[in-house]
Length: 233
Image (tube, rainbow, N blue to C red):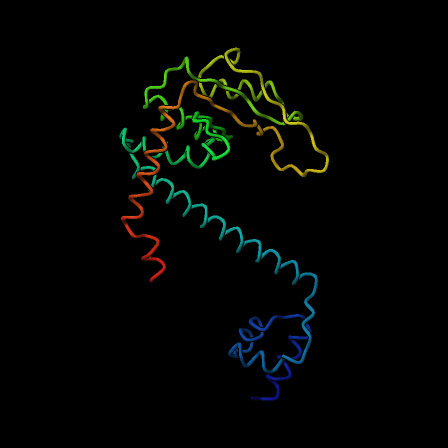
């Protein structure tokens, strides 16, 4: 290693240049530049720090753009792959969704009534499509908004009325959740619309149908041996 190269590398390092910059300027391998300058503490100048921040921000922006592009591509591909839903597919999807989000019979509560609550308008629309596929008439549906008392309650009531296509005067009285100052809420802001509760009157037959479909799905999963194959892999 020529002495003048070594000296110049140290000078550049003390001037605030990074190892890659030193290696490029002196025609050295990065590992060599690091070995020469490793004992010198790197103290970048304000300009270099600002430059490094700009470069990091540009890299992050490029990364976000790539991720956004990939996300949109995958979403569009899968939307196209789903296509139309058959009644059988809707029956299965609706039963799984209800089992995940709806009220269920318990050993201490033997009530068998379809009672569903959710804050996602698309989930509510899917649930209604499932109910109508099973032959549930509109006069058996009971709607109720459940929302925090500090929210814009009238706007939420109109929002859910628009989602289900029913005038709000046909809804049950809104349930207001009382404010608890010790709770740190994240569901705040203009977009917060609470949840919608959908109850189906005299729905024990539909509840048992849902329960049977869910049990059938569970049996089908058992027959596929998914759990045992994963454990043995």
